[in-house]
Length: 279
Image (cartoon, rainbow, N blue to C red):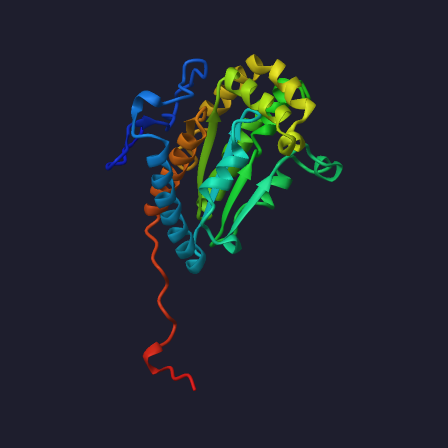
């Protein structure tokens, strides 16, 4: 597993990258990483700010070059923190070049098309970062758990999704996928917090309780997706997400390292700017 180590006031040695071909046991995969961290939340906030600033720097270059694109996929159980991750990790980027695509229950129009139709049209253009809040993986996992289609239908979607992501990668889109991993006890705390706080009442959905009743079914379905749709051009990272600030730092650090590897620099001027005179 890949190791992400940040030297300084906080040292990180947290495995997140799922090795190709392996099937994760989500019952034993850590949801917290306290023992692997030196330093506390206060130091973490400083580190997160520095990571967000560097991410914004690379995003400006990506936007200026218009040669590559980045697709960030966030999956996880209800309350795992997809919205919070987006809000904290991307807080310093230029909104002109960063877009969020949230995929909820398909509309009647979307259902009249193939299931990847609504996904493909939200893929990033060159120069853009697009974050998928849920994704095409719902069309495997949720469909499977809720028995919305026969097994013969959702099982063939593994190869569809793999081919789709390979095509995006071939076209210059870098794909990074995150499974935000919380345990059932943490989900209970977060759902109860929504009930206590009037400002969070809008987030509470009775369907979350239905999904919670099927927790074990989701824990059986996700490992198969994570294993069968995990390749070098579209890797899965399983993020311990019980502690929100740790989750944010891990996601930000992986994205910064991903952007560093793209070999980007600001494009040069198309003319000799030394000869330009502005009256």
